[in-house]
Structures are given as C-alpha cells and as structure tokens.
Image 1 (tube, protein in one colour):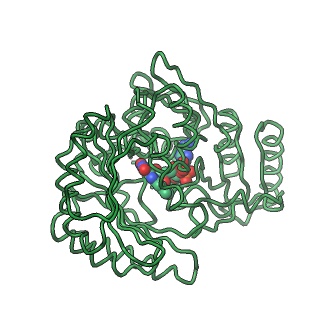
Image 2: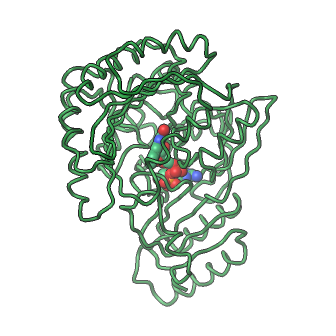
Length: 465
Ligand SMILES: Cc1cc2nc3c(=O)[nH]c(=O)nc-3n(C[C@H](O)[C@H](O)[C@H](O)COP(=O)(O)OP(=O)(O)OC[C@H]3O[C@@H](n4cnc5c(N)ncnc54)[C@H](O)[C@@H]3O)c2cc1C
C-alpha cells in the first residue's frame, strides 16, 4: 500500500495497522479510490488553479455521506493530513495536499427541488452551473457565484457572492440547514434549532468545522431572462467611467447588481467594462439601468434581456481550468480618487494580457444582516476589489504574482479592511483573522467544540481556542 502519513517515518506495526484500516476502507467504500500508481492519478490530483501541483497519497471519491464518514475515520486512524475537495476551484488550491488524503465530494451531485416550498436539498459536489440549471427548471434560484464551474460547497461555506446577493443575501444567508460530517466521523444536521453554534460557524467560517455533504437552501422565483446593461469604455475614459460606476452602484436599488472590470483585448488594447443586471421586471429595470447609457462614449453599449443561466456562465471562458492564477482581494466602501489612481496605473503595467482587475458589487440585502448573525462579517462593504493575474508560463509566476500584490498594496489605504475568506490565498495567519473579523474568537470556540485537534486544517484555518 502506498499510503504515507504526514508524520513519517512509520514503524512496521503502524504500517500493518494502516494496511488493515486501508482494507476496511476499501471494503466499505461505495465510491472510488485513486492511488499514485493509477492511470487517472494525475487527473485526480489536479485542481482549477494550474499553479497548484500537489501529490496526495490517495484521492477518495465519495459516493455518499457514509463514504465521507468512512474516509474521515480512515484518515484519523492512520493520522493522515486531509484536504477536502468539492469544486476544486479555490484560488489558494487548498483542496489538495501533498502526501495526505484528498476527500473528494465532486461526484455527490444529487439535487432535489421542492418547488412548492421554494426549497432545495443540494449535495456538496454540485457545480454552480449544475445547481442553477436544476433550480431554474422550476423558475427558482438563490444567490450563487458568477462562474458556473465553481463548487457550491466552498462558495456557500465561505459566504457566497453573486448577482442575486444584493436582492436575496449571500448564499449562506439562504442556508436553512447543512448536513455535515464532523472531525469525529459523526453525521449531523445543523440548523438554527439544532447545533445552532455549528450552523452559525459554517455560514462564512469555511471548511473548518466538518465536511458539508448537503445544503438545504431557500429559493426565490426568478424570470428566466433578466435585463442587462453592458458597457465597454476605452482605457482613456476609464477614470470618468469608474467614478460614474462608483456613484451609480452605491445609489442603486437592491435589484441592481453591477460588476465592473479592467480587461485587455487580443490586440493588447485595454478597456473598462461595466455589467449591470436588474433582478425584477424588465420594464422597471429599463428605468433604473438606462442612466448608465448616458455616461461617456462607450465603444460598446447595450441593454438587452439575457437568460439568467447565460449571465451565470458568461465569464466561464475567461477562467478555464489549468491556467495559472493569482489574486489578492480587499473590500472597498467607495472607489475614491486615490483608489482610481491606484488601479489605473496598476492595470497599465499588467505583464499578462489575460489579467483583469475586478470590482464585484456587494451591499443591499447582504448589508442588512448583522455582522455577528453569521460567521461572515464584512456586511458593510460596497465592493470586493481584486487584481486577477492570469498567465500560462511557470517562468512568469513571480512577475505576475508581484503585479497583483503591488496593486493590492497601492489600494490598501483606500480599503475598508477585511477580506473575503473565499478570495484569500496563502497570505498568513493575520490575514485569516482579518477574513473572519470580529467573529474570529467565537469561531475559535466553536472550532474547539467540533474539531479540537484541528483535523480540518487545509483551509483558511481557525485554530481551536
Ligand atoms: C473563477 C472564480 C470565480 C469565482 N467567483 C465567485 C463568485 O462569484 N462568488 C463567490 O462568492 N466566490 C467566487 N469564487 C470563490 C469561490 O467561492 C471559492 O473559490 C470557493 O472555495 C470554491 O468552492 P469549491 O467547492 O470549488 O472549492 P474547493 O477548492 O473544492 O475547496 C475550497 C475550500 O473549501 C473547503 N471545502 C470544499 N468542499 C467542502 C465541503 N464539502 N465541506 C467542507 N469544506 C469544504 C476545502 O477544503 C477548501 O479549504 C470564485 C472563484 C474562482 C476561482
């Protein structure tokens, strides 16, 4: 058996015990095991971010929650490091590890929509596109992110921003209950009335408290098509457009979700783009979105009805699996002149034409939930802003990473503080504390209760209090 533990070298007795445990796992598992000798090992160890190149001792593809329990018990019995993977989409690559076990839920994709009760039970392996398609088949949706290949699990556990967020809150605000396997291998259902402390912690505290196997989420009626206003400005007009975007977005009603980005076309020309959609009747949407058309002289400008499922996958082509990615995020309450100077000069020096600089609008219903009501604390931000470095050649890693870090530093004085845990890379313990803000110490107490040994530590880690 090629299982290695995190604490090698291992004695003969330990090897014998590990082999026995491994045989037990093999006999009980309904899913599949992939070992380094298997032909599909390289595929099994791959995650979305091409900079991540880890070699786990095994990947356990779970078929159901009992498999997750078996995997947790096996990993504990041999004292192995564990990474938990659902969508494998995290920029920090935390869902795979060297020499330990990857517990993979990506094949657990059952989804049951109760259209009458506007409710869904969704297993943790679903991608956002799969989830959105299943709920929209009933004319229902809840907040999910903007790239359809992202995993529902990691997104929900960290918070969950998306086009519906300003109207209906974060994904985790729509969570009614979660099915979870804890560090001691127990299956629990956590909600406001059962294991309420755990339920509070998983709504923003990430994978620190157990392995979520299914999410119970509230749904909302949604038209299959929404009104979208898209604008593309030449870089020379970006300063004025960004000022206008800031004012428009901060004064917009909850029905509007307006994101913006600096982009570069294949010829190397740089642009600033705004995409605003209206969550409601198109007629009312026109009145709200049309003022956007009056700003500056965009090279492209349209207001049109776009299928929601298309809006939710429009950016997929920009973020394919396997390219090299790095980003560093922070929140802004407003985009003031100093911030505009920082992004304009920073974006111009991008070493890769694929790189972007993104503003994702938050606020609205997200801001009306108290910062201590769930583990997600950054309720008062208006924008999540992050340079996204995208490139292909490993020899260019350093220059691209530095580019994103430099913009982040230049923007830092204008930040409202904090960072979205789901957009955090490998940035150190102090930044992790900033991600959980004033909720950190309560999270550390919940961690002590449910995972005192810090078994789940391949995440934006909260040390048990
Ligand atoms: C291109 C791109 C676009 C994005 N867009 C958005 C967006 O619009 N809105 C938004 O909010 N976020 C967005 N994100 C961030 C996204 O929410 C995180 O990357 C999230 O972690 C992805 O979830 P995953 O299941 O794919 O993660 P994975 O890489 O599988 O895991 C990420 C972390 O969650 C833990 N984890 C995974 N599954 C479980 C589980 N079942 N139980 C317990 N812990 C688990 C892992 O151990 C790891 O620490 C985006 C990310 C990318 C790369």
